[in-house]
Length: 445
Image 1 (tube, rainbow, N blue to C red):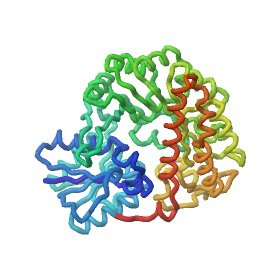
Image 2: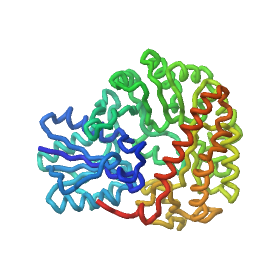
Image 3: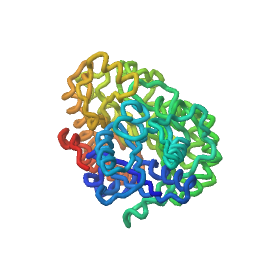
């Protein structure tokens, strides 16, 4: 028996349109995890995978007994197109990922089977059912699924894709989130908040050859006791690492010291907005705008870089958004910045709220990529939000503003090095992101 796994990408992020800097770099653990699950539980099954992040898929050359597709909302249209093609060839297709997790019932007409939630147990059950001729329409994540002894991702699978292929150096210790920030899908995607045992995570990290690792958790600092334990056991491994966290870590000096000693080089923090009204509109009240600058300085005191994430088009935003945001990130000395556009995802309460309020202005899910405005903002037009989005990316990564942001770095040689890295990152990312709606919407498989 042969199973083929496919991860489609939106046109902006697909192999053909990625910068050479990112072209052979996988951006997800998904394929590594799915391949590992199948190989451990079904050693006699042949597995192939195709990831549009790092390669162009030639569908005509693919043969399989069963095909699995992993999809997010902006790639679901492409996933449906792949499914239609393979099903027309008589090959059954199942789908999993964030979008099928949020909208399993709306996916089942396009696929032979749907996995909703994490696939660690469901995928095994689905394959066994397929072998027995009784594959179900929808497989839901079990309420009592164990988070112990997870199968470690197959980390070398991308090395055979190209001579520049790299080891998967990403790790996930926790899943989901118990916060209810209105625009976020994390409270939904893993049926709650879950932790893997710290020792399991450490054993997995020991298998990674790379000296640098990236945690892909929604918020590694959700449980500070858990994070403290993880830091203590990371120290002997002498790895450098990066992870998403919340601003709350700045209040705990003991934890900040542990982070630094364990090799933490940087954190991604969702500041979301410099407007208190906008923060209140998304129910993220634990973010206090008046505390942002002190929190960033505290992290810098421990030599931890800050990547700040901001969401545009929130209900408290106004025409002064660009200047207020730009002034803040320069004055606060945020090392790197990322900007996205507020996007309600189908299957969430926020999407239902926007739909019921007649504020959804775009039904093409390919444009639900956080780079296009798909709703009517309260105080701005959709076009103005998209223009602000582009303006903030461009201006934030100009030499002048990079210099202002990084002026806190005192050793001149270190500052120059960071300025150059910042400038290159901005140029590369901006070129990749800024694509026309027609290009993004195009389904080409």
